[in-house]
Length: 69
Image 1 (tube, rainbow, N blue to C red):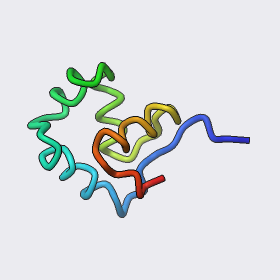
Image 2: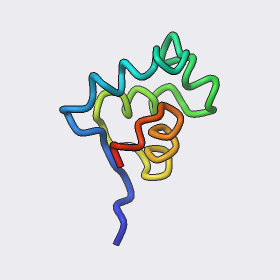
Image 3: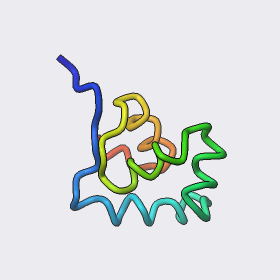
Image 4: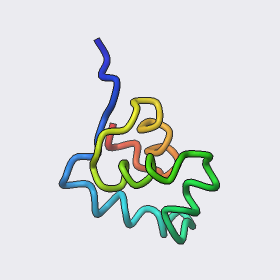
C-alpha cells in the first residue's frame, strides 16, 4: 500500500529550501503562485511536514529534487 502523504526528511530540508533560489523562485509565495499549490502546502513541504503524495512528487520535480524520492 502506498503512503498517502510524504515529508522531506530532516537532513534534506535545508537543501530543499535552497532549491527555491536555484530554481528562480524568490519566495515560497512565488512557488505557490507559479505552481498553483496553496502557500500552506509549499510551507509544509519546505519544513518537513507531511504533504499529499502527488503534491510531494510534483514539488520534488519542480525543484529538481527527484533524489528525495
